[in-house]
Length: 269
Ligand code: URA
Image 1 (cartoon, rainbow, N blue to C red):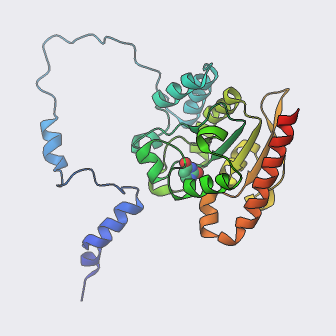
Image 2: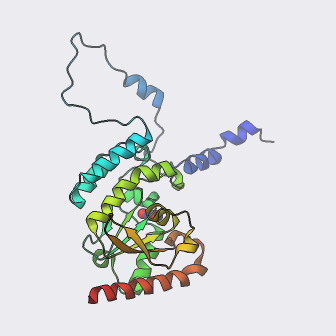
Image 3: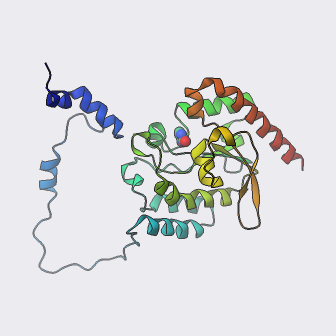
């Protein structure tokens, strides 16, 4: 009979645990001895004369509140989507960045009138560096193709979080609040005609509501762009949710037809 320790050391169980923690990609063919590596990495004897630092270090936040303020300042300073992309890429205040492979900024046509906003990159998006390239992104593209829209022409996509939460867990409220200034500025710079929030996380964060997606979906809301300006926004089901609940695809289809018809009306004025 296997003891409890044997069960814990079972290679399959260890692997499953690593995958659950977010380590879902092998990076080498053979295991690395981290203890030997850290011995090698120890600094050599300190030189007699200390070198002076050549550059001023970037401000480093000590708390998540400070990080959110730094994110807010960095985002507000951006005047274009390219500047914003760089600001997100160099931002070090969110710990999710340390476990992510890539910063996932956006995909699609930046001049398209329609902007989708999802939750956060998954494993495929983290590996490739673009949003919605995995199974849920493929479903989204198929649904859009059914109304004649293509990602490279007709829509633009980003996420609330630019870094993958380990193991695809739900982002915490602190992580969401910290990254929010970037997506808010993203929307302001992109200025789409219509916004579509994919799933409850995006809708909740950007509409500042705790109502669930089932209550919110299919309804036009006003997204507050600035003190004076709003923009029409519709929450709908996240395609990953539709993959698990295919019976709800009919509702999602009705939402897409409504979005299409509103966009056609907007294009006529
Ligand atoms: N789910 C999301 O919310 N965003 C992605 O980019 C991929 C999956």
